[in-house]
Image 1 (spheres, helix red, strand yellow):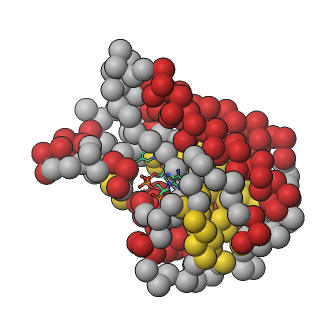
Image 2 (cartoon, rainbow, N blue to C red; image 1 turned 60 degrees about the vertical axis):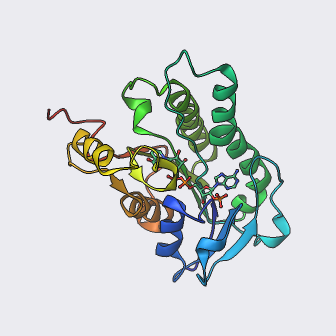
Length: 232
Ligand SMILES: NC(=O)c1ccc[n+]([C@@H]2O[C@H](COP(=O)([O-])OP(=O)(O)OC[C@H]3O[C@@H](n4cnc5c(N)ncnc54)[C@H](OP(=O)(O)O)[C@@H]3O)[C@@H](O)[C@H]2O)c1
């Protein structure tokens, strides 16, 4: 079946890779601030800033079968320098705006036979990492929310979370800015490389498809072995 899939974010990074994998077989809607990177990709772009706008629901179909929320942040600093304002900002972009848009979209998600919702966490929720207090807190909220939402709406919705480790996208460019940094980060992973957007998009595509119709309430690590293996 050709599904209606809405990506919040999808103009670049992991979301864009998801769009590339889906647009041939599904109707893909991308809501984001920019669209230049989309070129002639056969998707519907909806101008949208999660921090300011209500999404224009009239541009969306009555039924949404797949939903992915991509906006996120990486503020890696010591707890001492992470002010409460930064915690609040991280909580807003990663979590609160997600809650807001799901509320808005509930009627359209309910029109699907079984909607699949995919959110992003981080490996730093499962394993404690220094300088990650703010992002780990914001993504931890997503994991708890996702499980509870999955329970409340089963079997009508499936809700799953992908928890990546460092993945090469515009969001992480500061951390991978030169060869030395990249090599260091590659070597921290048991699989000896950081992730590519495609590594993560492959799992998102699976979670949005009927092939995963018995999977809900899960947090899936896509992390080169980072969260479970100690090989050093
Ligand atoms: N990359 C990593 O290393 C990594 C690691 C762990 C977890 N994650 C998580 O994975 C998710 C995707 O990450 P990514 O690396 O693909 O991020 P990215 O490269 O920054 O892409 C984020 C997408 O979200 C959109 N977006 C951002 N702010 C928005 C806003 N206010 N309103 C509407 N759209 C907005 C961006 O589009 P516009 O700029 O056009 O609005 C873009 O399409 C994030 O939640 C991130 O926290 C990433």
